[in-house]
Length: 178
Picture 1 (cartoon, rainbow, N blue to C red):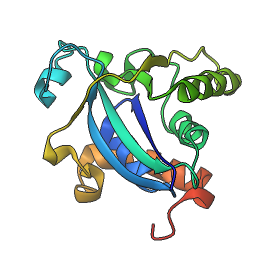
Picture 2 (cartoon, one colour):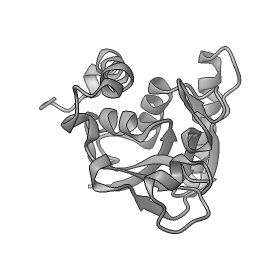
Picture 3 (cartoon, rainbow, N blue to C red):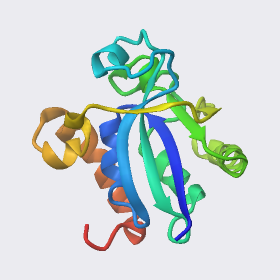
Picture 4 (cartoon, rainbow, N blue to C red):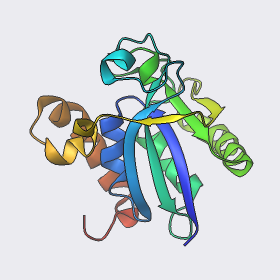
């Protein structure tokens, strides 16, 4: 197995986690915080926007099954990379679109993918591309949030449509047990 890690922010981490948990080749997804100034931030601190962190997911995947490029294609499908510091009603730097790369190869792949993806959008892509900073796992109640709270209104209105979009567009990449 050629294990790699991707760290991505594209709005609320519950949305990204729910989708990437269904992608074939993904071994684990952890919701957390990255890119800020305060060590070990809490959800309340990150939500205030004062720490500079983004809500992110850390995706560990088998690169022999799913490539970093594949991960990015899904990422750009399930969030709007043209809105600065916002995804839908979630507004603030904590909801920014960001790729934290773990290697030079990931940086180059991300640059190339963003260049190619810009043709699909009516506005410029504003996704930030930065080296991976310290990652802080979110509190336990945020992990597997959609799986454990599917009836919660935010999950029904925001997360579920992204999961449906993934299932529709990438059914061939979904885990067989899903």
